[in-house]
Image (tube, rainbow, N blue to C red; front, side):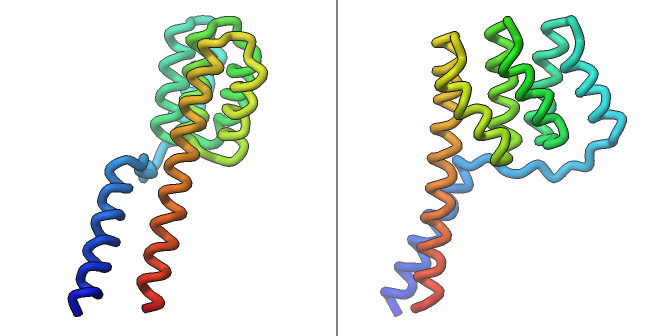
Length: 144
């Protein structure tokens, strides 16, 4: 009985710790007009508008914006915009968006952008491993 309670406590403690560090999925309905406005902002000539649009797209996890963000990450001459695009891609978290961040680590000409991309990718990998370990521990506990 003590062993079961101890295992249950450890699993719950592990789950709680992982949720504190993992990024929750946004559960908000975003109107099509909002998505279109943010996509228009990405294509603006105003750097501030581009950057804030990328930020909001990442926060709202709008996967429809992955391709425009990838284009921004590859083609923008402004380092800050490339970093904003990489952060948004990381927050969206699709395989395509994460791969774009991973590729920027190797191929971006700016050391600063590469370092930020590496940081985002490492955080993604760490969270992924943590989620996998939690699933394994929960499965092992359920089998007992």
